[in-house]
Amino acid sequence: MEGRFHIYEGHPLDLITLPIRLMKALGIELLILTNASGGLNPDFATGDIMMLTDHMNFMGTNPLIGPNDERFGPRFPDITGTYSSHWRSVASRVAERESIPLRQGVYVAVTGPNYETKAEIRFFRMAGADVIGMSTVPEALVAAHASLPVLAFSVVTNECLAPVTAPVRGEDVIAVANAAAVRLQSLILGVLAEMDSPPATDPM
Image (cartoon, rainbow, N blue to C red; front, top):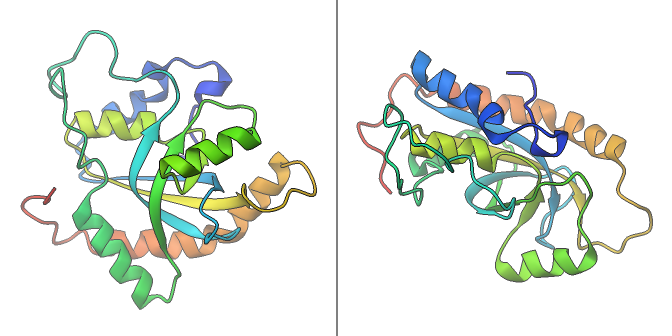
C-alpha cells in the first residue's frame, strides 16, 4: 500500500482497517507497518528508526468494537504478542548486518490531528512511551485479532522533549521521514529476504 487512512481525516475505523482484513483474506503471512512519530525518549534523535515492541492505545476507540467476525478471530483476543518476537529478531539481525541503527520501544497512538501539549508529552513519557503518533495501532489490533504477525517501524521525525524553539511543522516531519526512507527500505527488504523460512510458531 502507499499511505493509509487516518482517524483524524474523519474515516471510521472499519474503513481504516479494511485493508488489513483484505490482505489477511488474500493470504499474507506478515504485516509490516511503518509510520512517522514524535520522539518521547530523550535518547532518541530525529531520523532514528524505532522498531515497535508494544503500544498504548490512547485513541479513545478500538477497531474491534462492534459485532465480531469469527472468520477472522475471537470476540476477546489476546494481543500481548501483537509485535512478533520472531520477526523483531530477524529485523535486528538485518539491521546489524546492514549497519542500520535500530531503536526498540513503545509507541503510543493518539487521534491527532494536532500535535501534543507539553503536559501530554510529559504524561506519556512517564507512562513508558518512547514515541507518539497518529496511526498504526488500529491496523495492528485488527492484525492481532486475525493472528497475523506484525512487524512495525517508526521514524522519529521530531524530538518532543527537546527545547522547543519553533512549532512542529508537517512539512518538516515529511522531510525527515523521506530522508530515512532509504535506510528503512533496506531494512524491510532484508526482512522480506528472510521470509523463505518462517517459524512454525511465534513464541510469545
